[in-house]
Image (tube, rainbow, N blue to C red):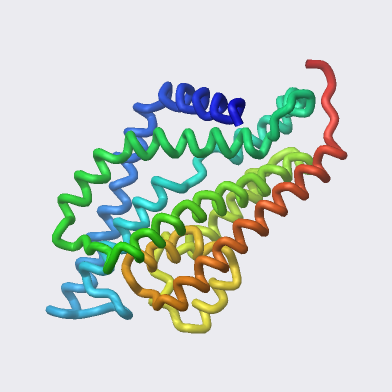
Length: 268
């Protein structure tokens, strides 16, 4: 385990070199969020006092988008998939085939070190933004709900990483993986609840979405925080989310093993 703690330490040092970049990325990320909040305010103003969209009041809707921002900061994969694909194309993974270190765990350590620094840097502007919107921000119903939200957020981070890692493994077979990554991102942006809460859709479309892993990347942990799930639904949802994590971990392992059989590197 010592070698992986060393990887985390190196990852933190490397990430700190780009701390200003992360800060500006966070600050400019509030621009579309602010636009979304203003849009929903206009929608609710048209409905009059006490108006609702599905089960959401104005406070609930704004809290939803604020929570989406928080979960996204804590769990989003930024450039890990591109870096993994580049390692394969450039032959940099050859060194990992000769050393007693697992490439998947190496990349997972770098991912979490990057999320740690990004979260710390983003904490101040995110907190200030939430304070400015505090009249709309709701707290979780109880401690159990908040603990379940935290656990689900960790599973979300793992799910996002393993999906991205699996997509990057396509670099063993194709020269450019960007098309596949953008296709997955397009579906993820809608089906994860990033664009809008999924429970404002007709029930049929909600069922279709939940046949994919994407709702468990954002919508599910946010729904936990907002107290929208019964205890039975919460337990079942966490089990399904953990199942998706396990499935994509196995997919990542399988694609690595098959890809290594095809991999060849010259020089170095």
